[in-house]
Image (tube, rainbow, N blue to C red; front, side, top):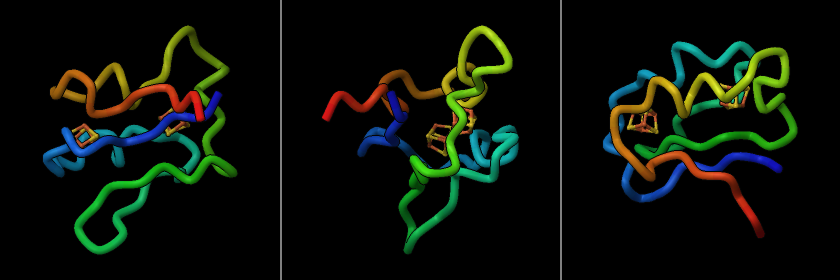
Length: 64
Ligand code: SF4
Ligand code: SF4
């Protein structure tokens, strides 16, 4: 299930620096995750971007 960055994001850049897939980029001034690039960090137990994000709810699993 891909991940998604929500409106709670305050653009701290932390997730972008830890993503091993280059899946996080800034479009305008919004951070977005490219679902085609995101591996969901399946090499480890949980996504690096969620682990480092200081804002609860800024990165969620996208159920849509
Ligand atoms: S889950 Fe992993 S690969 Fe996907 S955007 Fe987050 S850090 Fe990048
Ligand atoms: S780590 Fe969280 S708050 Fe920081 S840019 Fe990424 S989604 Fe936004």
